[in-house]
Image (cartoon, rainbow over all chains, first blue to last red; front, side, top):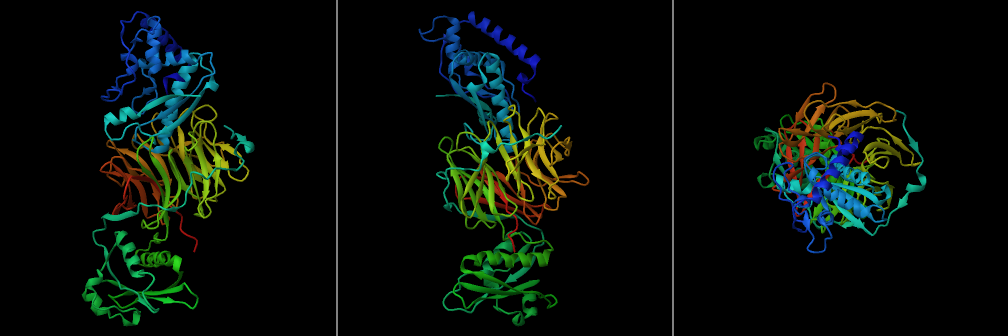
Length: 182
Length: 442
């Protein structure tokens, strides 16, 4: 139930995984970069992620495969979660790495907005949304983003991205939105 | 664990927030209340139209208000007016045999009398048992033009208590959140209405979420959470004047405000220390903050026991949300209260402190359950799939809660014995998070 990133030994594991993901990306076959697309939601945890599917060339602007991956990752501004869970799914690790690279060593600030689906009690869902936002915050900080750059806010189930009471709607509402602020 | 006290005066010095987002006035959307299930043998009663001793038309139809209240309680079956063959206004004029033959057990008669002073009235009424001719109640209730409807609800309260043994809760109000439109174009409103759905008034509104309203014990203030500054903050607003204080706007979560029974403190949920949610108590007078929980889990949704000694809250420290309790002074180790099922959250305690109402996961559906605190027996009272936010009526006999009807958020009530169900819907939009006011000062 506790987000993976909250335990030190897990942090190391994540860091290692992120590094290997980055290494893998260097040799990835290139596909056309696509802007953020709505996730094709399936059952719990089945939402596909634009971040992973769109790793690829940035239409001639990319200077290398790594930069191309970053281009796609940085365009992903929504991270989706499984039900009652704040673990960041592996497919988002390059997305988080791309945002961390953009933020590291700068004064750019961002707000992480945590959300849940409509099930369960509202204030508990505020807690779950905050836990999700904190999971993303910790992941960014592990990659060099400084604490003052990141604010979190949890809306719980109060600001659904889509209306509806089915798995498809719920999967799209369990999310952290990454908002760059001036 | 020692409670951590922090003076935070400078940060929360009674910041009187900008009132730009707050408007006052009647809400456009009225509520409709309908009974969806009543007791199998409601008490047959005739509420005879009240006499009017003044000139012109009577300023209020007291009998209609009373009949509506009793009918919606699910425990009474008021006789239709059209079926009445006689319209007495005094107990002496009630011919018991006639009313009994029309299958009534009880008859209410009364008069609305104008007083000498302009706009002052007296409601005189009597409750007669027509099975034995006994007068059960003879009473008079003063009123003004502005309070005629409220005074009529007082009449309902008296009759209800006399015949059921349960204090009536018809003179109370409900506060709830209304949402129209969808984010980012949604409009969130905090509304207060009479318990019968009349007189809805908007007390706060915003394009950002408003949630978790809580009545102060004196019924004069509402605490609530608003995201109007694009971050969560807890506000306390006086209903009469609209004056509003922002009492907590720390980093991260500021949520789930709950008034202490003496009205001097708010229990609330904060995450400013480490990003993790814990329950605190904020003294509204000196702004001193006392930490009640310190656990690497979600601790939230505090509620006070009626004696003010214990705070119940939701925690997922066991891996899933369950109800716990802790001493209200801090420094205590929390004890787990619920063990049935995999999801129990947002407890509210009955006025006598004997029962907890909560949201429980019941065979895949979120429903309202009550638990007897003495023997830990749980009963599921509702049958929806997304039922939430139970709130006890001040008589402890009824719960109001949020539910869904054809994809819309509506309110519903259920008697704690599970026998009577009502549904309350707005003309448009979703309504949710109902909370029942305390009884008015008498």
